[in-house]
Length: 122
Image (tube, rainbow, N blue to C red; front, side, top):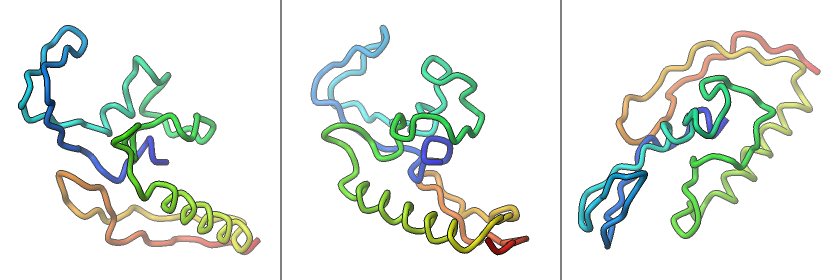
């Protein structure tokens, strides 16, 4: 889910030296926006990048950043997500959610409301 819909759309960086990225030089001190959602749907890396496939590699995405710039809270976020999914799976056989109400933002992705249309007990 994080690859398909990352919580952060863009992240800023300030290169400390000139960097060549695929033949384009980004000069030191330039303001750079890393578009995580775009990178997570790069067709050079992902087959059928706009499809939501639960069988994809669960850690092969940029939603929490990468390396020394990785999100310090990603371990906790993953634990919380696992706990919620596990609790739901024990109590609900089928959960159908309606269309979400998104909170408009250029930086983060979040929803204000996610109506549940149908819940069938396990």
